[in-house]
Length: 328
Image (tube, rainbow, N blue to C red; front, side, top):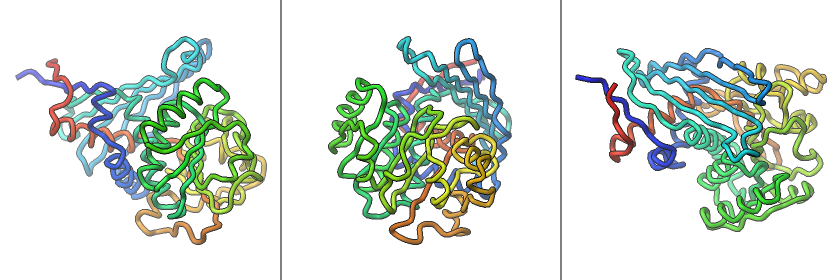
């Protein structure tokens, strides 16, 4: 019998992996990461400088789910100006017991969902219970997923969008207001950030996107945009005074400019990371201790997250009869 592979489009991935299910999946992924229960080698990165491009390849194996995952992602900085997506990606799911390919799915939608869900898991665990106002930096796909995720775990009553492109920001505000049934407004001055209980940064910035002095006491920050040592979204002063929680220590010290730059500047030491999120989920480390505490969740992403999300999407797709099976 010919081997069949299930192909899932972006829309089918979104139908198969709603945000509440994705947040739950990310909680499990972070437990696996911190418990060293999955095998995820460092991601392979290939730069295409003449086209402002990066190619990322991420393999992973989970003995728990008995699945292998392989993600191929491309990020080309010039694409948005040409009407093309910044991020394009495919994720393959493989049977870990015999190596048979099971599914190929759109990785851009999966990445946006699981990245948002990671922030949702962190927000659920670390943000104030009474958080009502969210601020999003970056009006792209990731920014949308971030807002959807925090609205899944907190009763958000108002949201702000900050983006240097006014048209993108307006489109974001209109779309997300309708989708989430909350007022979403475009903001230009970072001083307006003082109202925010939650902040999500989802940009490609090389410099901090806000000033430390503009933060509200007790704010929770999800920083997910910077994934290179020379890029950062968060001011060093904020990193210094925040309780820092990460997805994975080794990956963040290798890739997260938000932490690497303050380390090089002498503002923090390597012991400044309080915990991995999985350690708090497993109750090995404490989370928030006071209402005024500023907490920073820094995530550079991990293939375990991709595989866990893809595995959940595959199960749901089979149950819902989504996708197209193609014989090899």
